[in-house]
Length: 348
Ligand code: ALL
Image (cartoon, rainbow, N blue to C red; front, side, top):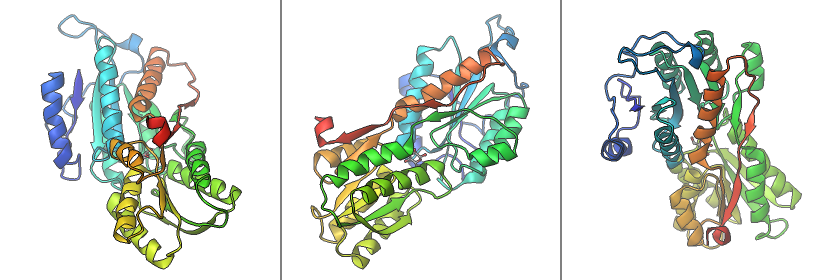
């Protein structure tokens, strides 16, 4: 069974595109869809392992319930992640039930923390989370673990120091973001000339993956002798990236490339370059490989991006969580997932 939780407050899951997605799920999956307040109506206590699970009242063996908690489902990266997780669940429907959650606003950390609390009190067995912030979510995840819930961190790594301070160990499943960004920027360097001016659009600065991507971009640009003339956070968002890229272009008219830490921001930069009348003269790279950027790569508007296989990311995390549920003594190591360079050539 797949449940899609819609939190009761307006600060919860995005209304627009997500409402359409709900309908699609109804039609395609014909699953029982829970659209009421949160998913916190079931007060089952958290369980520690699959072996502790008993028989349901219907005589069928209870299955573990896994909650996937993501960031903004308005970002195609996360809707792809959700679809990948749902298809894995329907292929393994005898093994676990899935509850899919997201937040509306990338920066709404308190809403994401409340989702963790709601999932714990609804009695889920495991939480697989892409945290919106690497530090702020650690205390609520520690509490989840203390309540007996298995926790797996995907996509954006939790801060090692804060985890240590909180005395909690949570495995991380995700790519090497620095290496992925470096791959993209190394490819960009082959299209530039030494000394060219470039600018960086960073993700949210308190996200480990955003910082790692910036470092990967910087390393590649420095190694190839480019001049980084500006670097600002556009908080993963297209419209903010558009505004910031426009001002970068007017302040530094010689810019030859913009390196965006995700594809949404790369698309914002594409529009900024176009309105500055510099289309074709400024190379743009991104990260995520969302469908709009694949089109832009084919059209030559974006030079390259990185595919971090969003559809598989949560699946790897879910599989790790299921193993941990089966064997509570299992010490799950971090799992590095693939990240690949995408260019016009690789798309053909
Ligand atoms: C990160 C992801 C994506 C995404 C971004 C926006 O954690 O890895 O690159 O675009 O979140 O929330």
